[in-house]
Length: 186
Image 1: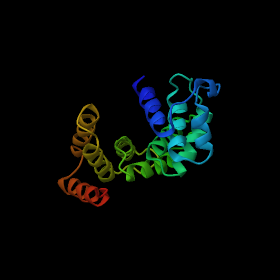
Image 2 (image 1 turned 60 degrees about the vertical axis):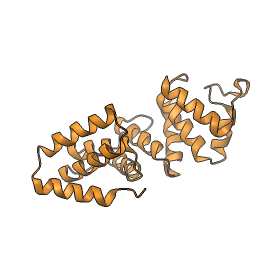
Image 3 (image 1 turned 90 degrees about the horizontal axis):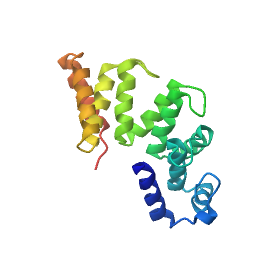
Image 4 (image 1 turned 30 degrees about the vertical axis):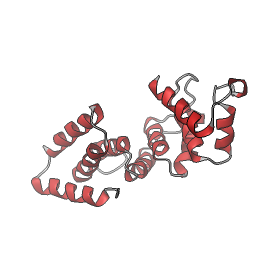
């Protein structure tokens, strides 16, 4: 419910208050859909999120995949993350772990903490990528730094510590070095 509220508020802020009289059958405001079709990335990402979450409109994996792909190609980190998860789960398109890893990497490289965490898990388990503890540690460290304080950050810290317990000190240092190279300047 909070996600939908956030999306609604964000879309209202970006695109003005929608009129339910102009809404599509799926309750996507016509104004938002129009802006998305006019190639506005924020609108495309918003539609991706609405179809992907399924809140209040029912999940539509094919439409979600379509809009997530459009917004992901335009550089939306959240849409890249959502698209990668759809590919990992085989929703809206056939399951493709390698392509999912590519999209997850794109989102992670933009500093999207959820993508960094998930990419760390993918390297840890060898999903779509070769298993690599150093890369896993690097992405988990970056996720730890980019998540706000709270449950998600704690989850990343725990996963990073668990990963470190399987590594030598030399591997940990290499992971830290790679993370330092991968940080996005402020």
